[in-house]
Image 1: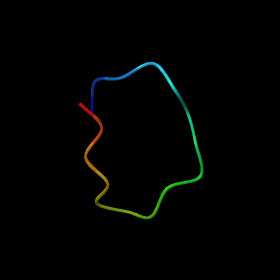
Image 2: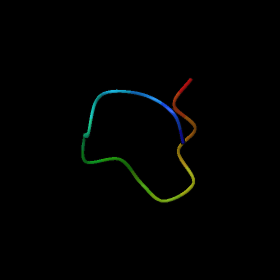
Image 3: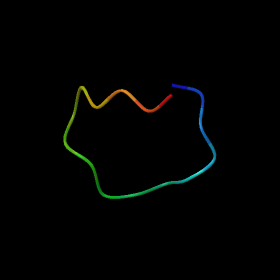
Image 4: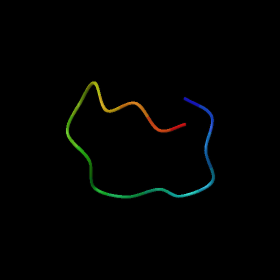
Length: 16
């Protein structure tokens, strides 16, 4: 997971 924001997302969320 490469992003820059730590949010409360469900497991398996893909942040591009």
